[in-house]
Length: 83
Image (tube, rainbow, N blue to C red; front, side):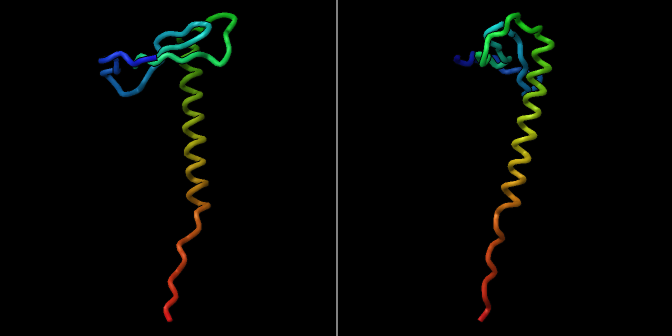
């Protein structure tokens, strides 16, 4: 799963799904990922792109919420005593 040189999308840094089969999908930067299960039929590229985009948005949202929860849970710095 190596990354071809010069394969980065020049129009945008956004990576897109460019190919999908029953067993794997490929991104515009050359990375290929196996599905965690085999589809009985390969989804259409348009449908899979939408699912991929939705899944990415959900993961990014969960990560942001986790970061906020961690930031809120950090104890305040103890105040120095002036004696």
